[in-house]
Amino acid sequence: MISFKNVNLIYDNDVQALNNINFRINKGEFVFLVGTSGSGKSSLIKTILKEIDCTSGDINVNSQSIKELKNKDIPYFRRRLGVIFQDFRLLNEKTVYENVATAMRVVEADENNIKKRVPIVLEKVGLKNKLNCYPRELSGGEQQRVAIARAIVNDPLLILADEPTGNLDPETTLEILKILNEVNKSGTTILMATHDKEVVNNMRKRVISMKNGKIIHDNIEGGYKL
Image: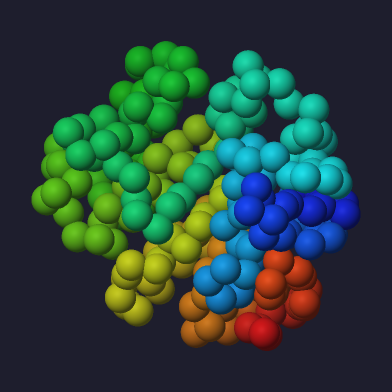
């Protein structure tokens, strides 16, 4: 599903964000990417999304070489991914329904399918009664559920979650993780960046630990180690 081979990323200011990164994540895995701020987690996720290009090495996602992706093909590649951010990134002028429906329209889904699919997904994340609400009318946890619904509505092969619980209280964090765990059980691969030690230790999933741009642990059995 995801493989990194000898990946390095050096920014223009000569800061090495990624240093000889090597790992493989198989289809259906749920993997935590942990480390303190500045450890390289977000940079790694941005290279998967091809928001930035690695300086050297090879990255493959679902047998697609990221290095060989042409600019015109990047939007189509990203359609197969679901992305969840810490700051939700919802469209504030659109309702909950429209925020999720927009993700389907981007992939040119049929409008009848959108009308059927969106309520089903919103019910899955516990928001079936919030279809016509606007983001400003929702709690932080509810907004993140909308973001999850948007990420999963097109049945992506892979979900990338960059600190998705960073702005949430512990109780809401557990609710979000339960939803992501159920999504993973359906076969979707999840890579979640976080620095929340308690979250990682409770879930007992594989943990890749980073420090100063390097992988320092890859713990199959789970557990936060830095």
